[in-house]
Amino acid sequence: MARITVEDCLAEVGNRFLIVQMAIKRVKQYREGYSPLVESKNKEIVTALREIAATKVLPESYHTADGKKPGSE
Image (cartoon, rainbow, N blue to C red; front, side):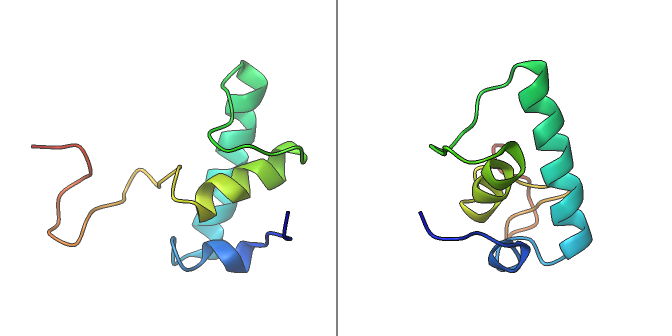
């Protein structure tokens, strides 16, 4: 697989500090027993970044273009 970096995630989440926080939270979830949302044979942090870049994981404050949270009515 291609190399993944924080810059790859910036297209989806515009704040690099938020990306780092999201990745840390996701790694903690893996260690609690959550399953990865993407196929990866990499370390936990790389898998978390891959999930963020693939928009499988979104920040809690994420809203769609119409101002609504995904999944809300």
